Every structure is written in C-alpha cells, then in structure tokens.
Length: 109
Image (cartoon, rainbow, N blue to C red; front, top):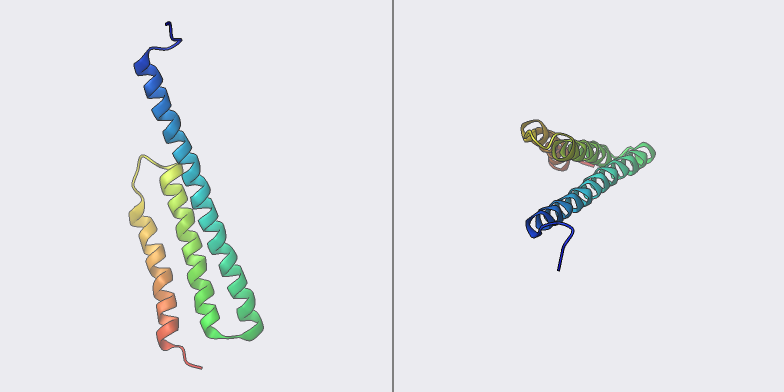
C-alpha cells in the first residue's frame, strides 16, 4: 500500500495539528476569561454608581485588574510565546487581588 506521505511525516503533521488545535482552544479560553472579567467589572461599576457601596467599587477595580491580567496572559501565551512575560503579568493580578482584600478588610458600613 502506497501512502502519500511517509509515516514519520504524517505523525509529525498530526502532532502539529493537535498543538494548533490546543493553541486555538487556549486563545478562546483566554479571550473568554478576559471578556468575563471585563463584563463583571462593568456590571460592578454600574452597581457602584447606583448604590455608592464602596465594596462594589473595590470589587469592580479588582475585576478590571483581573481582566487586564487575562489580557496580559493572552498576550504572553499567544502573541509572545517565545518569551516569558509572567514577571510583568503576575503583579497585575496580585495588585487587583490586594485591592479587593483591602476593601474586604477596611471598609465598614
């Protein structure tokens, strides 16, 4: 039986296709996470503007930071895959989380 491609070339191209599918799925997941975080930040901001509850303010800032963190993750993994930019990305998520922690600890009714 004659194949159009040798076995080792077919196996390599199949493995590459699998990795490309994984990268596509990762792009979708990273994008959905960033969109979800931005949507939550927007909804929390809208609720804050209506009620002026400061905990909603801290929560909206946190979710905006987490959305920014997801955009940075998207860029880190998909746009610049050869370099590790986690040193720039991790402080964004840490700062966002610390803002929410501040709001949870120090804000009173």
